[in-house]
Image (cartoon, rainbow, N blue to C red; front, side, top):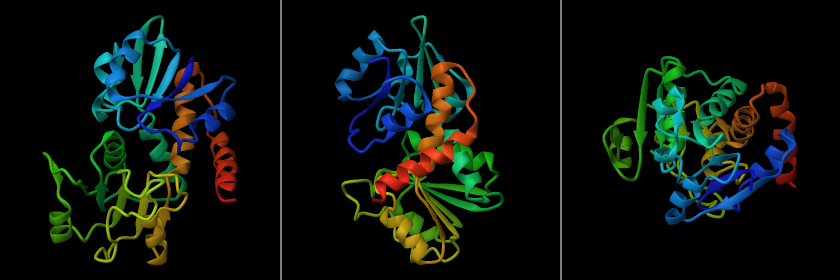
Length: 255
C-alpha cells in the first residue's frame, strides 16, 4: 500500500472513490486491529495515510512531527511519510469548516452542543471556537474533564442553538439509532452530523422534520480528503473540485 486509510471498520467508507477522483494514485482501505497499529506505524511502509475511528489519537506517539493545528486539536487524521519521517496533520478541521460555510451555519455568539468526545470531536470543537461560538458544551456516554453526561445535558443545556454529532451513533448498519432526542431543544436552528452513511441519519431527518437545518457529513468527508491530498502530494487543489465529487457520490448513494 502506498496511499490509503486505516481504521477499525472501513466497509462503509467512500474514501477510496473520493481520493481516486482527486488524484492519480491507488488508494487502499486497510482495516487494522488495535494490537497491530504499533507495528504498522513503526514499519511505515507507505507514502501517506488517512486515519479514522478509533486511531486518530492512537497514532500520534509514532509521529516525528505534528503540525501546530493538529497538536492543538489533539488528533491526527493525515500522516505523510517524508524520507522515513512521519508528519501528522488534521484535515477534519478544514473539512468541517468548509461544510459550515457551504451551508451558512453561523455560530458566532451561539451555544453549541457537541455530541461525542473522540478524535473527530476535537477537530469540530476547534472549528466551533474558530467561528466564535459563545459556549461549547461537550456531551458523551463517558463523562470526563470538560465533558458532561446526557442527563446533565438534558437538565441544563436544552437551550443549545446548534447541535453537532461527532459520535458513531446512527452510522450504518445501525441506522435506526440517534444520539439524542431533539424534542427538548426548542432553540436549536441547525443540526450537523459528521456521519455520511446513511446519507440522512435519523438525527438529521428529525432535525429537518422540525424545521431545522440538517446537514450530513458527506461534504465534510470530500472536503477533508481534498485537503489530505494536498498534504499527500504537496500541491494546492482548488476547492471547486469538492462539490462535483460530493454530488457524484450523493447520487450514487441515493439510487
